[in-house]
Image 1 (cartoon, chains in turn cyan, red):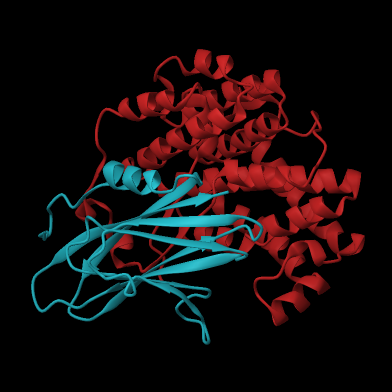
Image 2 (cartoon, one colour; image 1 turned 180 degrees about the vertical axis):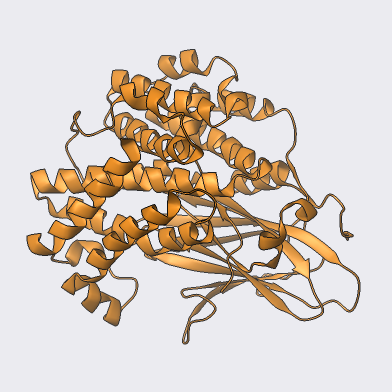
Length: 135
Length: 294
């Protein structure tokens, strides 16, 4: 699946609802849609997610609308910080997976990084979605 | 660092949209979202396209859910009067922030099982929500009656709220109202800070203090989001100044400073804070809240 500039790239409702459905038995809290733009150089899109330290969280990613594999990395600090710790990488499960889950507790925030691979030519766009659940 | 977007869940609006019954209600509500909301990146604006950082903030419902665990006693004098709702249809800033305020008050009443008050705040939330142009959501499926019918069933209500919360997220996304969503969150967060602060002043309960401190720890991300949108509404700049005072007070707390130096993910319930350290923060919270609801 690939997209050209100007095409309808993602159905936010469908993507988010699928992500939300994966949260069970966690309670839905929020969701985030991130526009992915492929460039000639690798780029990173980061989403900061503040959390309550006493809660358990599940993150459910829906990568169906991402036309070329994007790695999801989750860190304890933002991308400009030194000595940040990698908590999760979607590479371990396989970058072709479209539905990905991550759980965490005892954290005050996480930083979701989408590692967007370079493309040689053309304009590719897509949308990555995750939902956050708590219990 | 550039900032892309901020999607704020407006949980309690959701409550206003439908009531709860059982899982079939959830499905029914989901089915009632008539049109798929298609996001075309070309229509998302230059700032979004160029930005590389965004924020996903917690819902008002989750904040209230966590605050409930502190065991704070319900105080009927704390929530903003529902009679004030009619006063807020004067600017997007007022509409959005007070929509957030009422969302938190609604959740506060809900989690304290104050059924009549919950219904009253549902009405106020709906009223301000309509001011914000969220009519479509409020027009769905006799929500008021269903809400009333199931008001004592907290678990079912949370499920319904979560489902509608997603719907409101999508509406904000569709209408390209990111700054309104940010202001809505700030209103909800401010009201929750206010409730926690007032409860701590009265009860001096360590669990309430921990909850207050944890909510205060969100100040930094709140300011990042507001700064991104500071030219969107004329009132935002002064709101930022007021919240910066809260952050300054929070970061000046000795135990917070020490904990931050040791380990970023510390537990708040082991921290000690003096009344002097809290005094300025308390006043700043009251000022922000007063300016929003007046």
